[in-house]
Length: 259
Image (tube, rainbow, N blue to C red; front, side, top):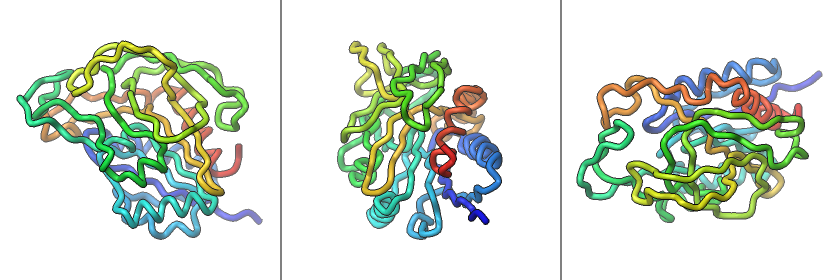
C-alpha cells in the first residue's frame, strides 16, 4: 500500500494572478492521485512540514519571518524538496520618485534591486535574488542539462514571459537557460547589454534535500496591479502554454518521486 504524497503550496503576495497559478498547479497535481495538497496564502504553515514531501512557492514580495525561513531550510536539509517560481526571490522597494509610467503601470518611483537585507537566509536557500526584468516577450528556452530527471527528454520551447535578471547567491546546476538583453522599463538598473545564458530553471542541493527555482511564470489579473493601477490588462503569460505546463508537471513529479 502506498502513502499519500503531501505538498504544501503557497500562492500570494503582490501584482500577480495567484488564483490562476494556484488553479493550474492544483490541476496538474491532481493528475497524480497520490498527491494531497495543503494551500496557503503566506508562510504561516511552514513550521508544520513533518509529513510533507515538498513545498511549492508562487509568490512576489512575500517573505517568511526568520523563524519561518529557518523552518523551511531545516525541512529541505532533512530531505524535503522546494520548488520556487517567478517572484519568490523578489522584495520590492521603490526609489523616492518621481512617479513614472512603465509598461502602462504607474509606479511611485524606479524599482530597486532586491536588497541584501531582505530575508537573507531565505534568499540564500533559494539561491538567487531578483534584480529586474525586461518587458514581456517571446523567450526561447534552451535545455542545458538533459541528464536531470526534470529535463530528461524535454525539448527546447518558446514562451511569452518576463525575462528576469537575478543575482546568483550560490553554485547551482542550470537545467534551462535563455539569452536576452535590452531595457528593463521602470527599474533602477534599466539597461542590460550583456547577453549570457541566464538560468530559467536551476537546482541546488541543501543538506539531504534539493531546491529548484525558475523565474518563469508571470501572470496578472484584472485587479492584481492595485494600487499601482485600478484595472490592469489581463496577462496569462506562459500559464496556458503546454511546454510550460509540462515543465511544471515534471517538477511536481520530481517532488513526488515519480521522476
